[in-house]
Length: 296
Ligand SMILES: Nc1nc2c(ncn2[C@@H]2O[C@H](COP(=O)(O)OP(=O)(O)OP(=O)(O)O)[C@@H](O)[C@H]2O)c(=O)[nH]1
Ligand SMILES: [Mg+2]
Ligand SMILES: [Zn+2]
Image (cartoon, rainbow, N blue to C red; front, side):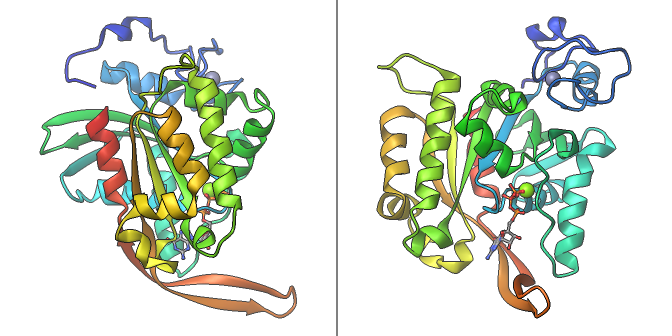
């Protein structure tokens, strides 16, 4: 995290996966066990410091891919107080996919469940106001894989390893659904948090210190949640709010939205309506990330 090579660097070896610790054959592209790109560990060695892992978690369709893609693009364009440098071309793929879809007024496709096709981004980020460099590894996980792992732990080892190694997490919740009275986002958020609680496994009477940013996504559907995200969570995602209070010592609440206006295209043949982002208007994307960086 600091500019000096960290003491943990001596432990890094080019063929040992940074995420799950498995030793892989020389020149392996992905870890054979958790499918993390082996370029991450090689880049970390070249960097002479071990990166921090920041995970974006949440249900399928909550908006993780869109959020992460847009965030990386903002960082790459020096938004706010940040300057960011991608380590390796693989780190640019996610933001390129998301931005080119949005430019064509489409949302990117759903992330496949198979971890070997997830996008990973490894960025060196400078927070100018703090005058601090942070190396961040951010994978775009599939909501369905997260759900499967949460339901029966150890089925998706990569999820377990990643969360166990994460220095900070963004828990995305669907604000639009919650505002409509749906209980699903609340229950999923609760399951996710209790899973994180068991993975990080601190004592019963201790609270977890890992920073968790609870991000209300699709806030364009319910702009009131921008006024006071915490009050919105307390009112509409009360189970999540209570669990945060009880088990997590370092939680902050945010609202975010990527689209300014949405249209709907109707496919008569398949009788399906598809959301069309007519224009993008980024709101609240950087704030949760900035908060996490400040906590690291
Ligand atoms: N209104 C609105 N809709 C959004 C926004 N972001 C995402 N969406 C909608 O949410 C859908 C899912 O977004 P993704 O980013 O693919 O969701 P995900 O969490 O990556 O889903 P999985 O890949 O299945 O885990 C999109 O296709 C859009 O319809 C937003 O800011 N506003
Ligand atoms: Mg996705
Ligand atoms: Zn691995």
